[in-house]
Length: 107
Length: 121
Image (tube, rainbow over all chains, first blue to last red):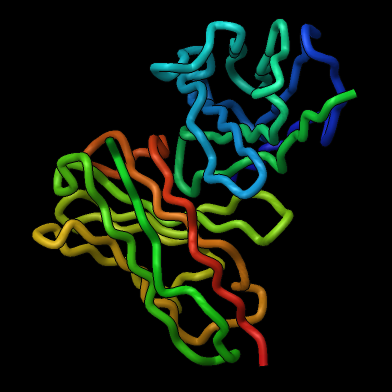
């Protein structure tokens, strides 16, 4: 099975900062990498698919990149609504797997 | 507007059974695969099970294989998860999620708010 590892586990930022979250797959997954955002007490929201394609309605300050085993999620100009936990997920093969999550909180 | 509403969670003893339901609305339910994903409170996400649009393709995580059964009723726009021989480690929020295609894809486009299953004596 493919394992997904995110770093860091948590990070603090101020409104307006640029932050980057890294996700690494245990083997190559091409660009079959998704990102989700989850706020406390809420269901996850689908942000990015295919490593870099934004879902409809997702602000353009979110961007994704990478291929193979190494991927990044970048949030430029962090807004108050962005403080949440972010999960990567490989959609390359079954069983699908999520990273352990990265919590972005206010500095 | 897509809506997924889970129900059926609660407190259940180890070794017992529970059936979760997910009521779907706002989209053509029988045109999409559906999924269950769980989350231990305060922890990460774990995929549980998936079913294709006409139930001809099913998939389960190794941790639940042989104990959980996924099924759907398309005319009722409903997804189910029959959970048997429950273990304490099955305690989690269970989310219903909509896929993006008829077959088993792994893009979880919309999620319900979840239902909490607590397995404890």
